[in-house]
Every structure is written in structure tokens, then in C-alpha cells.
Amino acid sequence: MSIITRATPAKPAKTSDAQKVIYAYTFILIVFVLCQLFTYDDFLKLLEGFFTSGSAPIANILGSIIVTFELLALPFLLGMRLSHLMRVVSMVLGWLVPTIWLLLSIWINVTPNNINSICFLGALVDIIPGWWAVAVSLALAILAIWSSWGLWPLGTKSSSTKTK
Image (cartoon, rainbow, N blue to C red; front, side, top):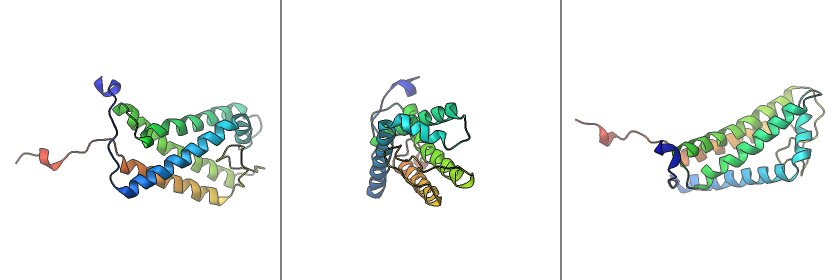
């Protein structure tokens, strides 16, 4: 049980390039979550337009999940003192954020709809949807993977523990 309750400091990033990527991904997530929370009610209405009519409950759940995942991915990226379990959960949530945006971006492009904003920045800024949003979501996924590599919290077996 000590793995759950004991908070430990984060390991430093593996390389300076990884640290720069971590800062960039953290900045993007902070901007996303602040813009989405600032216009949360309108953000949910925009998400409702992604699906067929009468999908307000789906939009509310999805909007809550997106904002919560973005927010809970930050402790891992910021190198906060966390338990090992929370560090891994925060890292995985950092992977799920671009995955959700990737799926939503693909969904918008392959389904007939009348959407005027992709919602990356909530309802604060209208960003026209298109295939470029899929590329941005893939870029976010690359940033998430690179950040996880740079701050990888899971231990690896070292060759020094092998007996001859």
C-alpha cells in the first residue's frame, strides 16, 4: 500500500530536448483547459453539435471527461510530488487527451455535420474544423509520447542485477 500513499519527487527529464517538449505540451494543455473552462457552457453546446440531435448528455459527459483528463495530466508533466500510482495515471491521461481529440477530429471530418468550431480552445476562439485538426491531434499525441518518454515513471530492469 505504500506505493499508493507515498508521494515521491519526479525524476528529471532524460534530455534537454525532452524537457522543452514537456514544457510545450504542458503549455498547450494549460491553454486548452483554461479556454474550455472559461467558456464551459458554450463549449458543451459546441460539443453537442458534433453528434446527432438530442445528444446533450453525451456532450456533457464528453466535455467533462476532456477537461478532467487535461487537468489531471498536468501533475505528471509539471513534475509534482505524486504517488507512483498517480504519476502513472496522470501520464496515461496525458495520452488519452490527444487520443480523444484525434477521434473527435476524425469524426467531424467523416460525418455530415454543420460545425463551425473544433473546440480546441472551447468557445473562446472559433477554429474552423478540417483535416488539419487531425494533424494537430497527431502532433499532440507525439508530444504526449515524447513527454512520457522523457519523464518515464516506470522502473526498468537493469543489467547490473543479473547474476553471473
